[in-house]
Image (cartoon, rainbow, N blue to C red; front, side, top):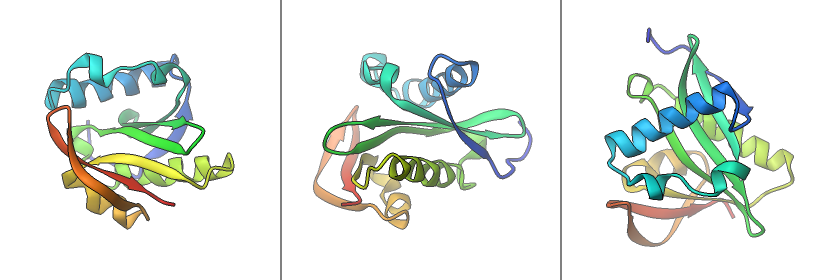
Length: 146
């Protein structure tokens, strides 16, 4: 992969070629790098979620999903390939996902953030709440925009 250009961010079907590439990236980051057990990483929401990928120079460099629940839209499974980290890919995907949720009439956004990523989500308008907790062996914080 060459240098990361401004990514193209779009919503894709889970079972499309781009959806599968995004899922492979997500699995590589969470299961491969962060050692999250596959049974925790992959769940029934994958089939019904809205999936978002970021593409740069022809490569899928980021992925996330939005699960529309009765109480809020939950953004999660945000992953960026190692070569594209720190270059604004996650923020670009988050802005896209937030706009997509708002277009669908959802003003209540929720996520759980790994503790070292809380600052990025705060810059996007999320507020941490509750107590720190451990999920998949890593400290997390709940965050919301409402």
